[in-house]
Image (cartoon, rainbow, N blue to C red; front, side, top):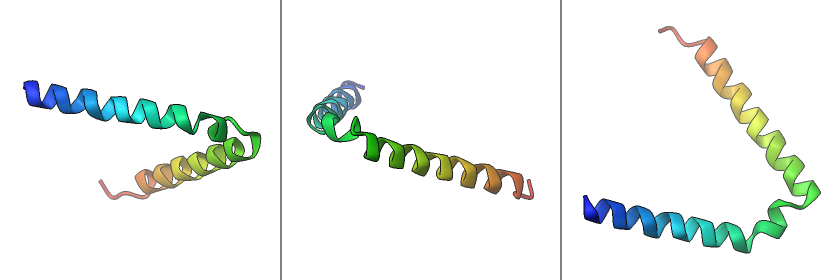
Length: 55
């Protein structure tokens, strides 16, 4: 359990540091709109997949 906890701390620290470095790119208006559009397409696709599933 300690190993799992330690790996999680390292992983999330890496993610936080990486996002801190690219924060200015993500907050840019053009890229933000593209990311929002992409996430919208992904959610619509997942919704269609669920709607058309046989189960």
